[in-house]
Image (cartoon, rainbow, N blue to C red; front, side, top):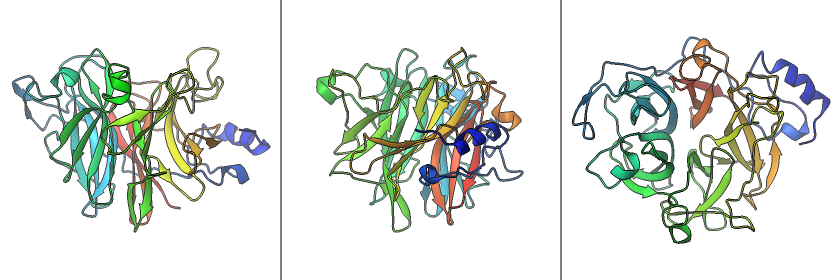
Length: 371
């Protein structure tokens, strides 16, 4: 994206405030000006109050006593529901504990009541045990069809390979696991490939955010090292798009010298706007000379990219500067002390948009945007 003088000026102030709006014609499509509600965050923190009989361990577990982070979000019966990743204290180190998906609901999107038990978790007796045990179920994104079916894209982690999987529900509590998202594509070619972080394309219809169809197909962006595209006819079986060499089609990739120099990892469900398809994503900064020196090495900040509605693989706009960065103490401590705001949940509620994010892989917080 061609830089303007304003872009350079904003870069100097971005460290001070993640809510600073972007200006200029080329940024009119971006959703900026997100605010952290005063005195609210974090909205979900680890707790040793709840026990759950784990069918994998065969014993009660304090399933969210270590960390709670990386939340999905949706609306059920007028309430905001956050489905968050929770880790027990069964081990130390990133990726070593068991992850389960917890449930919390809120009338105002700010104050939450927890369900008390996980709603999606590894089970040594179910069909997905080989993909989920012992690491668990991680990093959900959730969205809804027009007829009220909730679709969760999440990461199955068996401590050998991370892979995208699909689950569906009518009530957000009882889930049906469908297995690997790419398990059948191209004759199973990609069923053992690393994959995670999927953002299904949604739209607003009659005041609700629902899954969209473009050219008679469902679309989603996915990926961590890069952003790829996949399509589906049933929301369960997905086919990743390939380039002319037969490799994954990389529609955006990390950029040297920018906040996303190391990773470009998909965030919450993408949404169709009047300008195009808006995808919010998580950018990780490198730690070497190729990093963005305006931001902390290894930090996660949030970016936005705009795709064409006619061709969802075509980029028509991309922010060079993050719209949201780590600021609070609990966003710069925990499992990722370099600083992390990891966005995964986005919902409309009472005329505003609520963005839910993980703080340093340890807490859940919220930011609010009023169009």
